[in-house]
Length: 105
Image 1 (tube, one colour):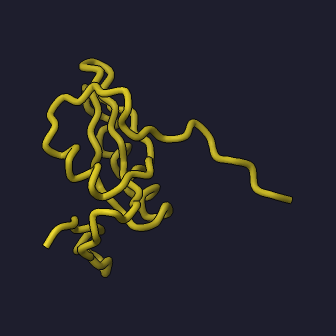
Image 2 (cartoon, rainbow, N blue to C red; image 1 turned 60 degrees about the vertical axis):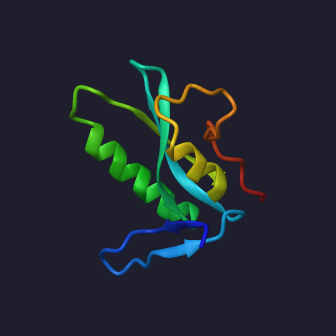
């Protein structure tokens, strides 16, 4: 069966296997020294992905290597393919928006 496990298995959150054509939210780590990036922590909702990004930032904050983290929308198929790439520098990979769109009044 294709697809990817999304979510975490601790603290009451459920992991689910989702199809390759599903769009999920993932945390993108950009490494400034090597100018590479990677995608981690796929989540089904934006709120869960933002919490995962905050946890990533808190984890790497005190270390000597500090990646920039952002939340991106990516298909499960692209995420699965990207996991096999090491030191990816491709400019066509998913990027996070610099700011959110304003809410309608």
